[in-house]
Image (cartoon, rainbow, N blue to C red):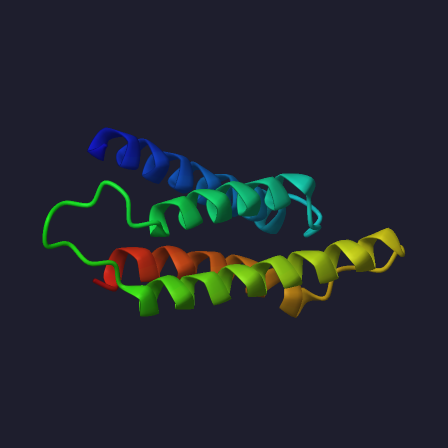
Length: 119
């Protein structure tokens, strides 16, 4: 069961890498647009994160930090809202506001930092 949990964690990290990688490619080499790949990365990270939050296959004496999980979920929802706002503006032909675009990357890094630093 621990092996399966590690596989889900790996998929979760891949989701973050896809989201942040697509954002970084746009930020430093693209047109600073929202792409479908960012949406896919967010979905992968979100689904795998929810699977990790389930109390299955945990070692004895290990408890989940529900406050941390809740904060990370709120950040994930905010990133999703910002991706939706940016995509909607792009479909209308307007540019993505710089604040919205940069917040997506900052919040993605924040979520990764919360996962690593908050124990």
